[in-house]
Image 1: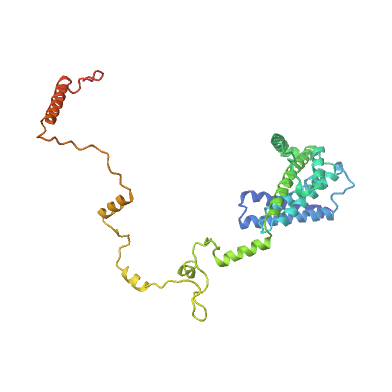
Image 2: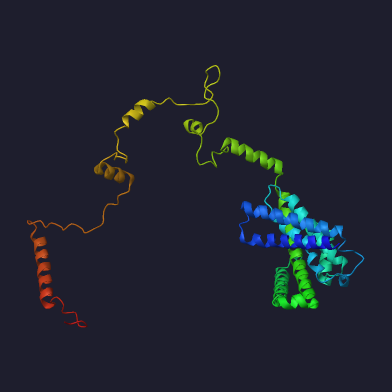
Length: 351
């Protein structure tokens, strides 16, 4: 019995260390997935070992569990927390496994009467319809908002209490009541997060139910990978095959076995065209002169004509009346300039 408890303690400690190491890794990395699988395996072994030694029994109550054994109650919670983080093409089995693990955890707490009245009611709602479980059943936006705020404040209080109890390591080692309060606070926080996770799992299962079957998606993906393109001409490949480039993106043979064309094609004098471009500069040469460009722009209406200063009217010298009018205008302008010299109107900024 002591050897089993010792090995259970070692397994649980190792699993906890692996779970904490995941926080510093990227979820898509191979190391993360490897440590994730190892942590899940260790927690599964802990659950199996606890079942072998009958660590928890439905005939007991919470007072019958020692303070040091309370730490093993959330094993199924950690399994349900880690399983959805696994990368897989089909997430439904993962979500179902996580849902079952959370259900086992809540059922164990319910057997020991460690669920509050509110959590017990939520657990009953979950058991009635697992796939449609939600924490926000009301369609009233105000009620949903108040519910979210209340759950946020509750989680904040639980974390503060847990942080406060874990500040004194010496008290945890020598005072059994403090250690018990710490583990009970951890269970309360795990229970709070369990119902939130079950809500998210139910929502994701609903979205996956609307998606096409996995086999259909795999066949379509495999076809796109083999073809390298789709029917509308879009291609995920950055380097289309030379065959597609030469055929202008048209797949299939040009001629059949009898030599008859299967699709339109054009014969090009590629040899002569390449030979003419041997001594060409690397930049594009102009194709028209500036005068030709302006003529083309004028033809297209790209040049606006008119405006600017009007040309001075030429006076006909034989028209004496017109000449006298122009002479009088010139004299009046000269008299005005003599009466109003340049700068005479500047009364605020005299030098």
